[in-house]
Length: 310
Image (cartoon, rainbow, N blue to C red; front, side, top):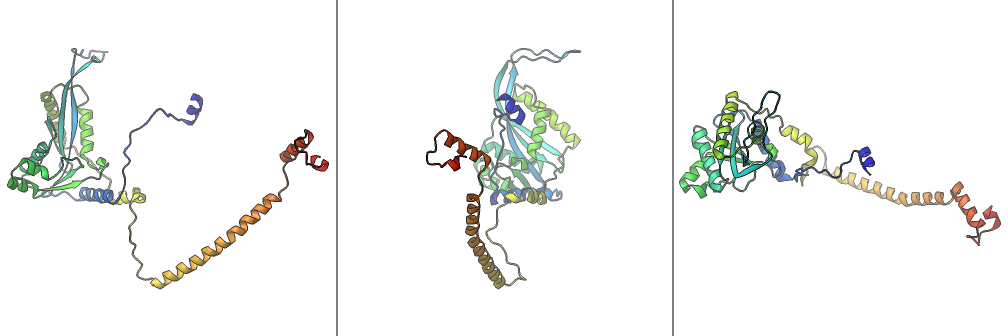
């Protein structure tokens, strides 16, 4: 069994987690809305900000690590101590190469509302309308502003925001996911025990990235989406008739096609009968003759004549 699996390069004990979305009209509408937003030129009056959050586990050491030395790597003990969890709110503006990461204990409706207020009052005070790209988390709602603030304040903040949601199971369309991946590899790939240490490390990383004006060169647009995912697009329920063709011609062509199909179907049974006759008149093969002879020789076919057994 192992040799056969190796020959076919099969590994049935391995599985990969994969997101298989259902591409329907809602999926396509949201995808093209986000892609059109990315394709627009930069306008400081209407900035585009990608926003998301990610959890992180706080882990500390149980023993003092041994620092690296010439010819020897640093050593840490396999045991660790958990210190709870934290949440990271990440906002990213690719046109300006700017990102902001806030460390919080939770990601409640109030926390989300405070993040939106900071976007409006602190980070983009001069923008007319901030277009925010979000996923479909249950806290990403305008109603969160009314849960947190007075109605007048909530309306003021909401009037300066414009939410654009990615399709369900398609968070890869949110550019901030790429930035979170960079943050995880460059800053969060080690044990961090407290929120203060986490905030300090992230602040240093954030300042360095902003100083580099690091951005993302996004290439996927609506034209490529229709080319690569066109076969998954929903089929419209209505089709327009060409203006230069008379509808009567369509009816005539349909009648002719129906007549042709009926003629073909009438011929098909005759062809099947001819094939069955040909199979019945086909001479017996050498194996059949040998098998028949053995049955006669040993008396299994008593009704066979002497000529048939030869």
